[in-house]
Image (cartoon, rainbow, N blue to C red; front, side, top):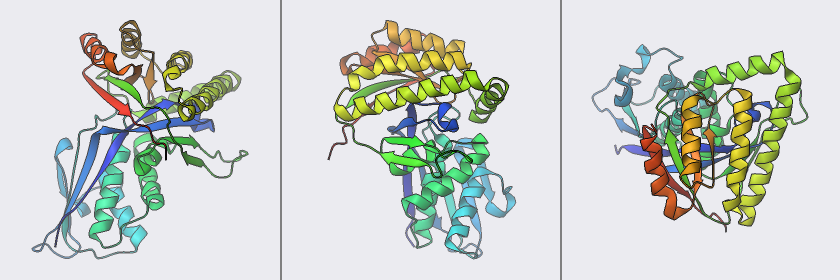
Length: 325
């Protein structure tokens, strides 16, 4: 029996961090330069139903039955079986690797989930459609992030720029809005990793506590960030991507006011700007992880080098390609 392989890209949020949890729009794009990969191979010598899980990046090798149901890899495998109604799969090995930094705002957890669902469901003979792949990944995201927005699993599953508005229980929107949209003009991003691990669930939880303590202030911040995301989509669709920089700068200031930046992020943002970036901001939940800078293509490598000299542990230069029909 052949092996089945699937990959899934990373992602960055361009606009809308934190505000997206409260029903405002966010924009995210795939980062295809880093990927999670899952390989599922049949084990002809294995006992029926025995699934061996291998994740060398986190030093994990275990039988599925020995893992906690709340272990993310175990959850995604079991959720795939449940979705397909399969209780006794053929013996196999599920091996996952990734080049996506963990806890850095690049969607590592969602990418691993998407890759596993696609490879494992194909191995089982019933490849799942994107909608179900995304739903399983979203449920697993709850283990990583507590109250995820849903944007990571969406942009990674569909591998397209996504405009996302989350439904809020009791709000005006009864279902989340998920729209892929065309980009008229390609643009280049430089991603700088602070090297500071920052679990999303902690930052999201802190913002929720702050919002509960001062809802008027935080609703104002969320509204301003949502307005920026709407303007950014119009620019990307109309060919004005080079004008996104000013919106990035404005968005970063609002996130600083929200309390989710950090000295490391602010230093890299300022370094990017002083090195010729058109704009820069943190990306993701903040407190660490990554920042992003909009750059002219010919300046991208110099900005990347400046970020590394200023303390970035890793940089990625990626081009978000035009997606016009």
